[in-house]
Amino acid sequence: MSRPPQPGDLIADRYELEELVGTGGMSSVFRAHDRQLERRVAIKILHEHYAEDPEYLERFRREARAVARLSHPNIVTVIDRGDDDGRQYIVFEHVDGENLKELVLRSGRLSVRRALELALAVADGLAFAHDQGLVHRDVKPQNVLLSSEGEVKVTDFGIARSLHMEHGVTQTGTVLGTGEYLAPEQASGKPVSPATDVYSLGVVLWELLAGDVPFVGDNFVAVALRHVNEPPPSLRERRPDVSPRLDAAVQRALAKDPARRFPSMTAFAQELRACLAEAEGEGAPPPPEDDLALTLVTPPAHAPPPARRRARPLTRSRRRPLAYALLALAVAGAAFAAVLLLGGGGHGQGGSGGGGGSGATVQLHGLAGYDPEGDGAEHNELAGAATDRSTTTAWTTETYHGADFGGLKTGVGLILSANSPVKLAQLTVSTPTPGFTAQIQAGDSPDGGFAADSSSQTVNGTTTFSLNGKTARYYVVWITQPPDDRVEISEVTARS
Image (cartoon, rainbow, N blue to C red; front, side):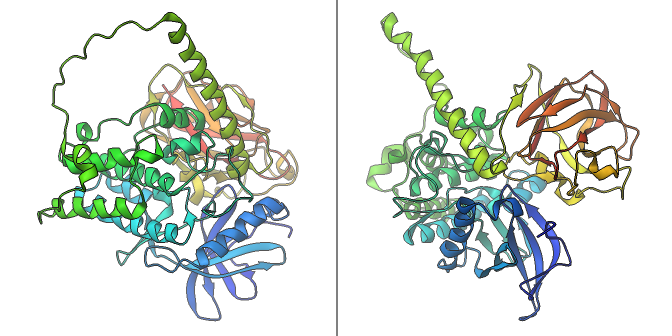
């Protein structure tokens, strides 16, 4: 293999690649045409630099084996798997539609009934996977596909793990998953169980109802620590039309202790069905006896002040900061391993800056690639992956040879758009391909005329640029010295 796969390539003399529809830390997904059966399929191809790594190769093959035995209407079907001249691939049924994240970004929060219908379909698919001995471990809206016919299908079991595995490619102490949907035990590097998927689906349901995730932060570690330490915000304050029973179900799914969540995904699905019946006015069945207090007791709107507590001994109070510091170090170490496994595959994860500013967070949107000295485009279709709040997806440049872009140009970039002109103080770039030089530029038009708004610096892992204070609507991460391959940007955040 001398170059990455691209539209027009023929895989295994059968699958003709038509369009790149997504890329992640390990693989790229294409829409393809199956010449033998004359049908459209989706094909996932492992990135070339992972194909010779036994660990990544085994994870990729394990995904195919795992999902191939999952025959359920709410799980994407595996059709084929193989090796084409070193290219490892998995072929799936093609789902013509959008993913759940795209639906939320397009529509905002959903009606209670629609949110429950979608969550219930996901729960049914995951319950079946659990019955077959598999935990998904990366349940998130991006991994739920919605077909144009209304079908709901869970996909991307790439980090799924057998419940019966004692020795495998991922062990206790390693974090796998996506920060915003990460269960506390995952964030701490502890063993996973079906309760792990229950928690993540609880976060997804919270997002469907509220229009946003319960925990956000500047980086993976910050979000992971919030999942470990903080109770979720009140759902009913965000969404007053959510019933006490549904609110209680979400709270139970989001319990920090796995033992306090629903005992199984099937039990969670059963309660979601009851909440759906209640939302449809059919009269929900009573909750199980062990859930009576949890489901039916709702705190008053204005709770009385708490009783005065006796002061704790000073020696105990001094231990708590140390405990939190140790927890932060543990999560940071586990997150380091996660970035290696999910984002960079052997690239170091450094940082020069990385902290957030004191101003407000500004939401940017990946608009397009920027290639003024070339064909004008640079993987424009992947630009949104740099601002989707997930470090497992990324915008990528084309592949070049040499730190000077092979002598073809002086730079390429990623155009970012704010909702309106804004004066940014900081812009933070995360990458699984550290070592490139970049500068932040600003302008009033996405078509060009950008001027420098920061100094140039090397981007290592998560790197924060201090901006000079131009007021602009469009910003460019302008890459001038790439490593000898390509540059990926997995996430960009900003503060005013």
